[in-house]
Length: 594
Image 1: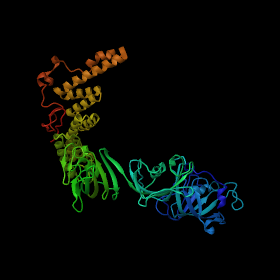
Image 2: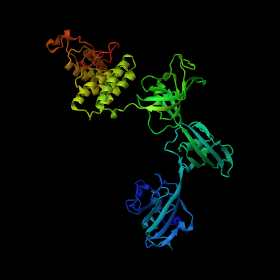
Image 3: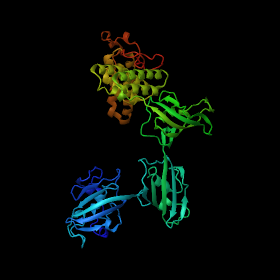
Image 4: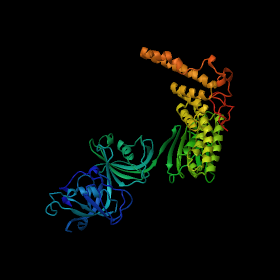
């Protein structure tokens, strides 16, 4: 097909041709591959898998070319030699660049190419007349994926054997590779053992070309690269300015995952099965060997005697709880856990050794069994309400123990069971609303303790959606507004609260604090902007003023004798839907457990 190399060529770009290479076709089906109907494809034999060649790939095909009257003008089959070209580089007629890109390995099809996608008005004398429509039977035998992975020609990669899966390593991962690096004349510069070598990608090995190539590969992929320039700098034995051939196989990717920053790091040693991982509340069974930094084994579980626990129930150190959630069944991993998520600042006696205080530990662990906790979507209505009550009680207990983050998590789990109520009856929806209100209030109280102001506003907002004038939600949201430097919004919530609970001593006290904050804000603005805001500063004291002592109206329930009500807004008391956690001192506390 020599004439394909000197006529009718155009650089291929997908934008003009707009072909769809992924829509499945049936044998015998015909379709146009572009909007102007310049190329029509008819499937003769389906191919293998799902992959298609891409622009820049070296493709190998057999073909038979005929004119519309049936005259054969060329055939690679008659020559007994497959035809090879680089896809999308204008090496063949435009119709081929469009059509072959839609094919799979082993596929056979007919491509009908109109003159604009063949040799146009000039033709290719003497075999192809002007303005000829051409027909080709094409079989895609195979292709080599050729990529400029650096974008500057520094590393041109040809895929020899496609990898398994889709995952590629990152800089923080470790990889096991084997490779041979050679000069253009075949002199070996370096060769690894057959079992390969292991290194961290960011640390690299031999030269920059190795890590750069590895980052573009999938596990088990084999490639051959031509490397030059900055990517081969410092390679001993390579003449200056010459390129280097790198034949490399990625044997394994050891994924490194920051489970909890640097406090808990997991490195995969053996990939697990499928996609399922444990969820909170799952029962897991593992084998492990646990060691100190010097290699001393302090605990070991092997054979059929598994170590089993329920995840997120404080039955294991925090680091193991977090790490196992990231594992798949059958996975083996090396887990490094700092003392903050391990055994802390005290010596801990274990079966085989004592763990000194403030020690980083390692677990080489295999996840053998997973029994997942029931997901909310699969629960019946009664199961949801039962789970809700159980999680709420656990949250209240955790709060009383001062474990605030865990308490919030339990409250969140409880609330998740009530979020999707489309299957509830009207009576059940009412019951769910009543149940959710105290938990939103509890959650807000804990978030206040933790200084999570924005989250506090969110929880209070959800409580107010259920009960628009709930005094506790208004008070806690006002506190969050104030902490976020939104005194105007804080004043609005406190005024609304006092409209419904005029004798609320905590709200009055908070309003005075907010009012002073607002005054100070206006004073600062007045200093900055001068007299522009002087009037605002003078009026600030009147914006959200409380009635004076003499203006209290006993009939309206705001008399001085009514200022003491049972429980402050940061303490217990209020709506009657909640029960005080009296053993937790100091406002703002949670008190809505029931």
